[in-house]
Length: 392
Ligand SMILES: Cc1cc2nc3c(=O)[nH]c(=O)nc-3n(C[C@H](O)[C@H](O)[C@H](O)COP(=O)(O)OP(=O)(O)OC[C@H]3O[C@@H](n4cnc5c(N)ncnc54)[C@H](O)[C@@H]3O)c2cc1C
Image 1 (cartoon, protein in one colour):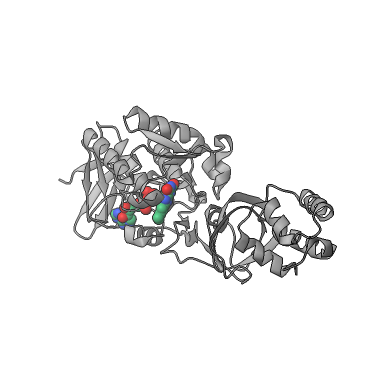
Image 2 (cartoon, rainbow, N blue to C red):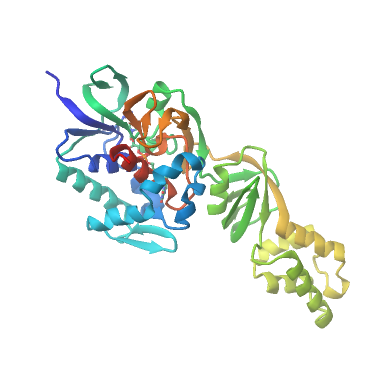
């Protein structure tokens, strides 16, 4: 007779490892992973250092995700402080780098080893190189099938990830075959822009404020010609569509009036000075970037004494309100995360189970929402895994 598992977790990435590591030791549990190693994506997170979570603005944490009301109760029940407590209380030490939280050893591999130890300690097994192709729920059990085997369980946790970086195993295949999913789209992506004003800027980095509809993102932007990247751009990419416009403030720390006053003062005291020199002193932005705005506002070689009001206004407008539009995002293969997956309307956000069958849960990036850069997506992996195991 075939043995019956209490719990089967399909996918041994971040959310699946957390889930399996927290199934009670008295339950019969199995983890199944398509690849020959567990946690391939987890191993490359944070440039191999693994940004486990982020402690910024915990009260409003849900606002850093694309479906804030869906994720709010999930994150409230297992928030970043609980994540820190979870790891620390089990002897896995963490450190902070600004708002971001990383393993003290700064090695993503150690996070994987930590989970494997927890899983071994509970006596749960993992089958590697076994891709689950299908599952079927009957009245008594759920049958899970791979090419070579078939398993039966009472509870099935689908932790198969999204569809970015498919070489790490998250191909989206099982989800596409089993559900009416929200189509996968690249998220946390660099953006190719239609305008070519900044095409000669490579490697220039600024702290900017981006406005898109009612959202704003204040963070780092990195120019790579007509491709923009950095945290602010990647966060924007979770929301903006192709050919949509966004507004950039390249100097959020100074307002228009203040800047005008500074230039006017210099005009009286040092009329022979170049406008560019004064702007560089006031703004402390990279010269190559300022040169682009100076050229576009006809201020190249202009001295303060000859400064025309309309040209200064143009410069300030470009500095504080340049509008750009998105030509394309990276392909899914290169985007850090994917939007889309199992639709939130099909999931009970107390238990992560399907509304149509409470024995089947979906966790992690397999779900529709996506979070901001800097630890938010792993936090959602931990929080959804927690929610599917511990009733609230
Ligand atoms: C380069 C990079 C850096 C990142 N850095 C960070 C970071 O620092 N902080 C952060 O918060 N987020 C980061 N992320 C995002 C984060 O890694 C993911 O959001 C997170 O790993 C999702 O966890 P998951 O368990 O849902 O899916 P995954 O970690 O993708 O795991 C899914 C697992 O399921 C397996 N699987 C899929 N289908 C099947 C099947 N049919 N049968 C069996 N097994 C299957 C896959 O092989 C895989 O092992 C990064 C992502 C990338 C690509």
